[in-house]
Image 1 (cartoon, rainbow, N blue to C red):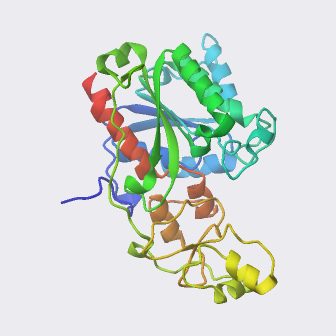
Image 2 (image 1 turned 180 degrees about the horizontal axis):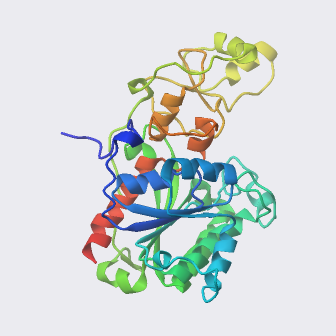
Image 3 (image 1 turned 135 degrees about the horizontal axis):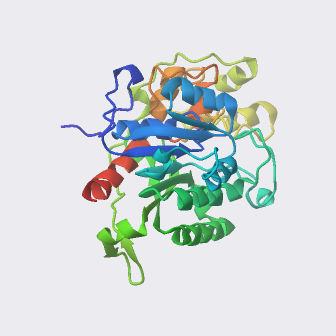
Amino acid sequence: MEIHKFPYNWKLAEANFTKDKGKVFSCFACGGGSTMGYKLAGFDVIGCNEIDPKVNQVYVTNHAPRFNFLGDIRELRERERERERERELPPELYNLDILDGSPPCSTFSLSGNREKDWGKEKVFREGQTAQVLDTLFFDFIALAKALQPKVVIAENVKGLLMGNAIDYVRRIYKDFEDAGYYCQHFLLDASKMGVPQMRNRVFFVCIRHDLGVNFLKVSDLFNVEPHICMDFNEPGICYGEFADYMGKPYGKRMKEMFDNRTHGDIDMSNAYRKLTGKRGFFNQCYLYEDEICNTLTAHADSTIPFNKPVYLSKSEVCNASTFPQDYDFCGFSPHYICGMSVPPVMMAQVATRVYEQWLSKL
């Protein structure tokens, strides 16, 4: 009896992508985490939009998209407005089953500046041009309004649902309504979806009004929504199931703190305080073999094994993120690409529910 719908340890070269569930276009595609999820679920991902040329090269190398739009999503939207001219978008983009997007989220992250950065135009590592990151979600919705795909799926950080950021969620719902879509959001835990990592993400799952009427149900006393079940409860996968301790060894400073660790330490802060009398190193979190990996970030030292003074290896990072073992990171650190991406298996689970409960019945 299979307990996990999708394997976390897999290879691109051995995957069978059926491409028979529908067509997808991915915005803010990064290194292709979402794209691989859709492919695992049987979808045909026909193209992508990504602003960072180096990250885009990772995507192109691994996925060879038919349509690759390198640049700001606002330029893509402007190109759509000019469809009567030579710059028109391919007809395939007006007949999508799913428009996917993971708008850059650092301004909503609980570890960032949050409100201090809202509304400010900056050059972020998510791109090479100045952008106001907290408005990109609405540029994405504007593109959805123009392309009118059957379904729109947007992923973001848990922090979007907390504090003053909830006002953005209200506007997201309003803009999707104005664009012609029923909108719902789900806070999902990757560790319950067959991903060996505790990663909480918000998914906005929207269906076009003319199609959503086929699935309407009363969700509570006040709302009628297109019903879709996004409950997952697969057993957790602990680090010990794929630990290999083949990562890069620590430098002198990290090794000194490692040697002063105590079993039960959550991070390196206790050892640092013992050695220096100061506070620090709270972000260097230990990973025990009988525990599920905490959220991987773009930094190699955010999650470190307790049993050996090494960083996570490429294979371990791929397993924890459900990236294929033979993925070509094109010189980037696996931590960086995987830490910035949606775990493929997480997206495969969401996409499968959308197909089984909506698209297959239209």
